[in-house]
Length: 199
Image (cartoon, rainbow, N blue to C red; front, side, top):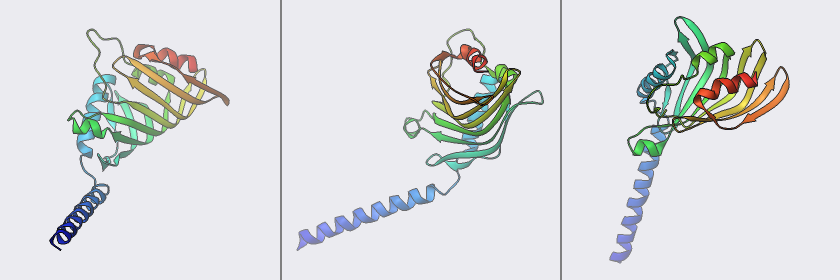
């Protein structure tokens, strides 16, 4: 009888603990927190790497479900170089546990820019070892990039960042209504050349 009561207590305790964890996760997935910390870190990286200012609405979300912002723009000396309707940021939970936060994926929707503006954003060669950018992948749900050669429309495309030197693009879309796809691996300093080939 005592063994049965003991087993029942263990079962009740396990069920209560499971319910408590589920309740905490449910609450956390509906609460906004740490968005300002992520935004400050993102703004610091963008300013350092691209020498531009980031304009964006306050981020909503948390490290568990990710963060979302709207009305994005990259601005330099008063000129808007790039804009987007929305952005979603997913953090790597493993990196958070290791206390070395990384962004696993940034998803951008409704991006608009032009070739000259993007070319001005391309990283330049720097002396010394290149720094690691704490982002693994950037995904574009749709993008519109204009140039003197034509208009590039991207659909469900992405760029994987491989270490501090390499980019792996996977572009799909149309150039002046002609379908195309491009994939490969490029050094960061070759990215402008890749864009020019597309356009």
